[in-house]
Each structure stands twice: as structure tokens, then as C-alpha cells.
Image (cartoon, rainbow, N blue to C red):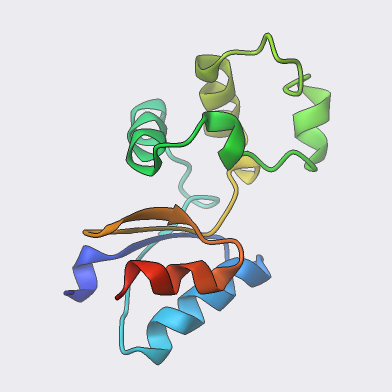
Length: 119
């Protein structure tokens, strides 16, 4: 795999995200890093990422963030578009790390899950 073929949606403050990056770097891979906290993803980017991962939007959310409760996002009546809007406005709600490769995409919690994308 070429280095540019791997993208890491990264938050440097997150130990799981740092762990996934370290595992990639230990294998000589320098992924394209998307610091989605500094540069939040827009609605279209988030929709595309959710589609690539093939999981419900809720599975990609950090439910223990205060803003999750403040916005009432636990309510099952809150739909995917509202959840995506919340992530776009509050990028801390996006769980991490997310790694995208030509072989697939995964939420890499624990970070060792990234290894399954490299074989």
C-alpha cells in the first residue's frame, strides 16, 4: 500500500488515536492524517465516511461527551441527519481513530484493529 492510500482520522489528544498512528508508523506507513478537530468534516464528508464504514452513525459517536447529553442525542428519535449535523458542529463527538485504506475502513478501538486493514 502506498502511504497516501491510508487515511487516519486523528485526534492527537486521544491515546487510541496515537496508538493506531504508532502501529502504522512502526510498519513504515505514514498515513495522510486528518485532524478533524482542527478542521471539522462537513456534512458530505461525514456522510461519505459513514457510508465507507458501513455502520450506523450512532456507532461512530462519543456518547460520553457532555455535548452529546446537552444536545439530547441519546433520544432514538434523533435521526442520522441530525446526528451528522451535530458531529459537523461538534467534531469532538466523532469517535476515533478511524482508518481508511483500499482494503476497507474501521473504527480502530482498540488501536490494534488497524492491523486487520494491513494484511
